[in-house]
Image (cartoon, rainbow, N blue to C red):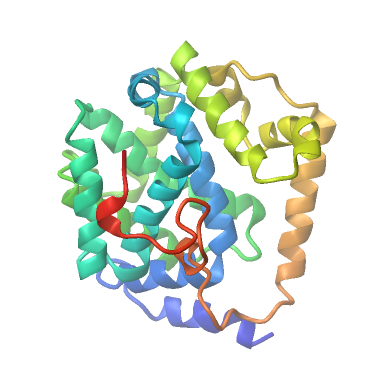
Length: 278
């Protein structure tokens, strides 16, 4: 059991402001790899509830015609930055690729700022509900400082330098901008169907309402999706909480479990950062 908390002890000795890259490396690669992946999927779904964002995404056609590639490309870019650090050769190349993709489109700074905020707060919120242990303050702040630094390298303006202030921006932005639109629905459906496609076809029908249990009512309404039965939501949440309790008895990971540590659907033989994107 002592071994289970070796990374936590190391993280608690690090400075979240100056050593956030090391903190995030341990969090994403060793402590909560599956949980953070799922939370970032929810984070991206939240961003599709903003009509200005979903309209642009739907216009590119990537979600309709190449949803798996879009998912893999996004996940690879995020992982390259997290695994190697935003100022490393690979991390900087991933950031450069992401910035070059974004430059093709007119995207409001407020939308950039909101998307950035979801990468900070959704993993923390997921952890509060389903983590095998709660993130410590160094992890929460480390995640905040890490993504703020990434945002600066994306040339995002007016990034709050205070954790609570940025979280308030996140909440207020959703309150104002989460509204239903056809573009929301199309991008949401394409992403939902992608998640379901990872399982055998016979599971498609029951998986649809199960997928909805990962999304709160605010997201479901913005997509125009039906609400799952309360008992189904409670069952899925109970399973995740039971999983969290069991994980406490597992030993700490000796090998990292980043998204790129395994072959992806789109690039089973490997990938080049220069080839990512539309």
